[in-house]
Image (cartoon, rainbow, N blue to C red; front, side):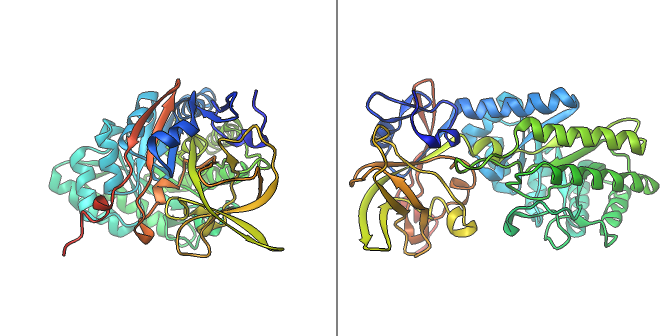
Length: 439
């Protein structure tokens, strides 16, 4: 039986052993830390698969003509790319690097959507030469370049036009992407979206299939998604005058998750209800005889809840009347989100889940920044050097945005399931970090 309040933000398979140790995917996290070292990121295979299938089921049951495309920017490597593809997801990438990773994982290029606001000509050539399914065009410079690249390759490239619906997603400004003042997409109000559609239709080596919008990330309401669908479809109806045939519509992703026990984001079914109901209603009202294929792009909402970060406790600093710092062997180098967004997390002592909280501490990292704090003011059992701190909901935008700041090596990553663990990324060495340097 599980006895800790933060259980709701840990992976589905989480349990507590008779020793009071945190168990994920049937594996003792304390033993994982000893085997692979810390910091260590673990991903629960069952949670990844279950959430992927829930998106397929919840959206597909309401709107059968739905594609679910995993947003790789949340975190990707070849092993996860293969897992998502085998479950039945497509993959969305935003760089030539991400494209190369998913292809290395055995993903069919036709199942890949290529996003990004400043794709280089080399990246476009890589996409076209590999037969990427869709390129989501973000600006006129890219549209012209892609037409030339496809012409040189002797093919016609399928594309979507990314528009900016100017919908407030009610999220952090840094991850709000669908408003008018954004570097992403063609604004409707300025006439640029119509211009892009007209040029895409006339381009000899591009086939315009439809529109894409994405209003932001970590959206904890359903109404912004519904409004984005409404605005985009009404605009699409207006664009029939210039020849737009909407065969595909991507409403993006941005579905929020719980990082702390007091957060209650909408369920996958609630997001599915809002998006598909609005899509069906608007298509009928606007006279779309053939309803478009719906594409959704979950990333964080699949990989985030499946990940747990493990750290070893090192030094402690108690400032009487102020706070007590518990320092761990990771920090902003592997999880920049608290420093960048003010993100909040839960934490537990993985080897002391059978002990009660005795003190309030701040968990800080080893990097040379005062802002290198992972969790502030959390109640934990009394800790000692060598104890293992576990931070849940760490699967998204942690390893993906990791760095070698202070020349600290990036952590290892393991996939767990059925009591077994598998290394899917080894820990970096000092030699790895210097591999590209020239003396």
